[in-house]
Amino acid sequence: MIDVRQQISAVRRSVGSRTLEAGEAKVSVISQVYDTDIDDLWEVVTTPERIGRWFLPVSGELKEGGHYQFEGQAGGSISRCDKPRGYAATWEYGGEVSWIEVRLTPEGDGTRFELEHVAHVKDEFWEQYGPAATGIGWDSGLVGLRLFLSDPEGAVLVSQEEKMAWAGSPDGVLMMRLSSEAWAEAAIAGGEDPAVAKARAERSFKAFTGAE
Image (cartoon, rainbow, N blue to C red; front, side, top):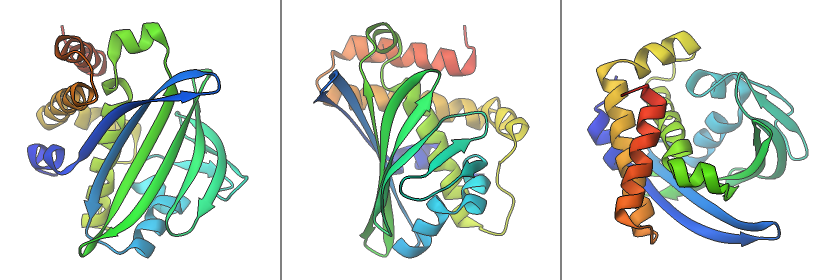
């Protein structure tokens, strides 16, 4: 697998706010540099067959104006497609709509993958869990992307059974612990009260792991 501590430290995270027409929103950004060129990374993050090997099986029309659906997860509409620099889409799950934007940027000998997630502030949900509630999931996605790029022909965790097994392993639990703490630090850097940010991250960690 991977060195979980090294993976967590290789990822950049930030948390901020934005005012939308419908009110205040929270903006979470996560990014990592991968050892491949921008054209290859574009294919990895936009081709259904390749997405299914590092993230989740996906169906639909993956083009501007098209609709997509991840198996057992979110779906939405693709509002912008700017090959090979990125795309934007809605992220619709559990009756709620948020927005994602993926940006690809050459950096050194590799390419930075950056994902921005914008969601309306749901007072009760945000007060309870903070950015780690979605951030842990995005961190898991970046783990899958790294595994796939390190061995494109090898086996990648794709089934829910395999993912659940890894999530319950010592490495999986450590990844979620370190991810929740990293998102707390990002929230603090974004102006959140440290005690509040850490308490929310702890609740997110427990929600993901079922910890007491």
